[in-house]
Image (cartoon, rainbow, N blue to C red):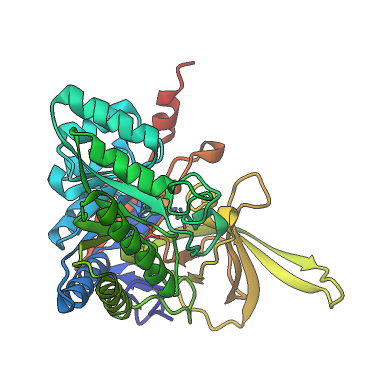
Length: 453
Ligand code: LLP
């Protein structure tokens, strides 16, 4: 079966094997081996365009401008940054390394944002030297730090203040970021009688001639499937903007609503529809600004997963297949077939870290066999090394089979490790019947080269 959660270019060939963008996965594997990340370029571009055009149309209809920043943390390579830019997106970075990739891709500094709750002086200086369009400041001490460094460089730093709105959204506690007890941003809520940390930070920025206050930033979480959270957070941010204007006479020009747009990971999952969500948010913010009696700011959003997640899949080779009898609490024993592949938690930490669910299929051939309840596991030395918790696979699954896991484009390669000294897999792009290597496979020599003995 193809369709979501597979990329739009994925389809079965007459003999049952999978092809992506006209490239037979068996050919990819013959040339590049497994494990390998495969990116469907046209799918990435289509989603980048879909988000940009949907938000431009919906916000344009209420009289507001909007910029879409691709959140590079989901996956950033030089080619990926170029694709994003060619589709009219800007690039959001969260470290000096991500900034370096965007700059290598010749994304103009003015179209790059820099995030981070603990930016170093070196990162801030690099951003200032590159002329980044926005540094999103995350704390009072950082405001001082950016002001000092901008002063040293003799430039005025464009900043946004990241606030936490109290809106809690997203798939897992670790990826929901706007609730209070976590490290990001400055709260809009004040202790009795006191000024909120968010307001204090905004006023502080206005005190510094080395800083230009662009606006307010809010990111509420990730893998969000209900658009209400975005609207609720936008309302809080717009009210803060109006309050700031009352306090200081400054009505800031920009509001960033962050990323977090959810995708389909399993067959039957329904992703957020960019047109729908853009319309809902645009209409809501327009109404809120009317209520508040303020003009509309320029908006921006920062989708990462929704652009690159569905474009990616991971190819593995099956090794050991082991039926395991499981004694179920209070129920009958059942058999689970453990299917081991040649990667695992080092190339996709999400199942182990968040309990994330994925879908897998055997993709090198067709099978008429009945299906069995399977668990796809990696080759690492721990039992939590699970790639797919639960999936039906053909009962004749065997060593040498090619197995693909869908929708691994976001936060797979970007969160990969070398656990157990496994070299990280390559990132291969497929497009119009051809493939190319975006990031080559690591080798043991790469890893040993770091070890100084
Ligand atoms: N903007 C900011 C400020 C963010 O912190 C993030 C994600 C994004 C945008 C992009 O969010 P997206 O549209 O991709 O959901 N590693 C986790 C997700 C953590 C995301 C952290 N920040 C995962 O694998 O699900």
